[in-house]
Length: 96
Image (tube, rainbow, N blue to C red):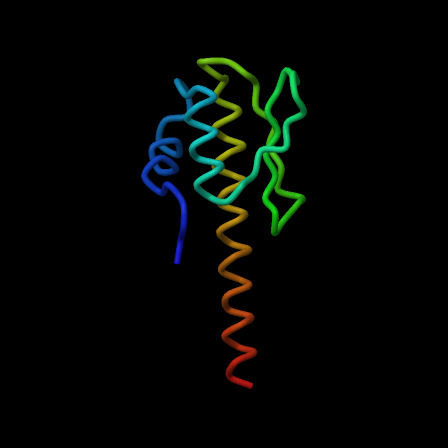
């Protein structure tokens, strides 16, 4: 089962520009990422607690370059693949 704001993810997949930091914050948090930003830092940093190598840095701007959307879509797609692989592995373990 997919948790997260799938509608926002699909919108971002179709249109990569015109997104702001609040959109990315909502997207990342909805898929379980946590913000680990230091106080007064110029960028926000998000990491997934189950997969610490899935990490994103986000500028603090109302409108961000389309590369941020490309990164967000890629990271969340990677997360979804890993979660599906884990679920398959658990199901196979239950069958043995």
